[in-house]
Amino acid sequence: MDNLFEKQGKRVNKEPLAYKMRPITLSEFVGQENIVGEKGFLRELLKKGQIPSMIFWGPPGSGKTTLAMLIAKHINADFISLSAVSSGIKEVKEVVEKAKYNLNTGKRTILFIDEIHRFNKAQQDAFLPYVEDGTLILIGATTENPSFEINTALLSRAKVIQLKPLNYNDLKTILERAINDKERGLGNKKIKINEKIFQMIENISNGDARVALNILEIVDTVKGKDEYEITEEDIKYVVEKKSFLYDKSGEEHYNLISALHKSLRDSDPNAALYWMTRMLEAGEDPLYIARRIVRFASEDIGNADPNALLIALASKEAFEFLGHPEGELALAQAVIYLACAPKSNSIYEAFNKVKEDVNNTKDEPVPMHIRNAPTKLMKDLGYGDGYKYAHDYEGNFVKQEHMPEKLKGKRYYFPTDNGLEKEIKERLKKWFGE
Image (cartoon, helix red, strand yellow):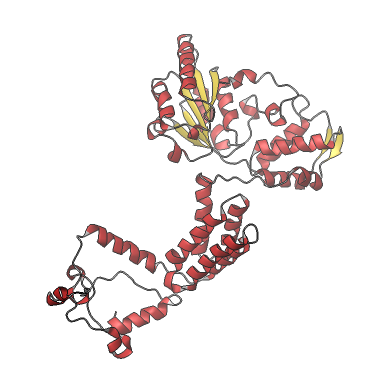
């Protein structure tokens, strides 16, 4: 258990720059104007002193922890922080006892739980009654969509506030403040920085203020001087790889695969290649992408271009054969091919309609004329009677009923006019007059 609020006034030189520059007042808080700006709803609540339990949902470095601390300071509440990674029900009970004591002395308690999505249902249920009766104000922080990870009961009692990644102007303001602040930042040095460097840091940090300030601090350490200019080479030297916002089990994972799938469906090879590469560079399993594009080949292309499925499967085999990174080129080839292929979801639609009938009707008997008749008894019972062998007829086609009695004439597959399906459509029309 960590009372971070008490540490606010105890910044020392060994602390990271990102911690030293953490805002002390709401006026110092940068970003999230719609929440804490002059007309932001949270600022209005603070003016009234009416603070509900809340879930801050946003990417790393967007200000979730800082905002919780500032709220506690503004309403003079006891700020107690728990990490869902290292805390359990025992720690929650200890906080509840402290909150009850505070309540008797007229002081409110804010329980801040970082990574609240990592608490299981039993852990979340442990503090639910005390949120309900006002013993404590809960502020949870999560990078994951709360609707996926947090109990419905808890969500209904807490206001979900979505924080956005900081934009370029936000990050520039934060970096300039750190460079010029003589008490907490690097203001006692003469540091030159230009617009291009700000843009580089903003691009690398992905809207994460902590990452941006860490880059600045590492550059300062490497330079080791009281006067210098930050160059592109400095940034490239301290940053080995872009910090991607990605969690292979979280919402952003599903956002990116959705973007890939929809770019493919809309026949945009450039966007499809971009989203696939974003996933690969962020550490996604290439075979996961391979599985998704194999599925896509059947779901959104189907018989409009049957080669799509072969190419998607071949890309999977190529990656398994070549490995990383050479095999990724085969995935790129497949993605571009699928994006440029004619589209049809006729097979997907037909399959879903068939499943609906199979699951919602009783098991209809197979028509007698298409039943197998391997024994004399079965033949005597009429199995196979009247069956017409297609190869005995012109064009190797014969018209006879194959559906159960109650589903006679039912159609599921409706080919489009796209790609090869146009030929299939014409063939079916010739055979069945459809």
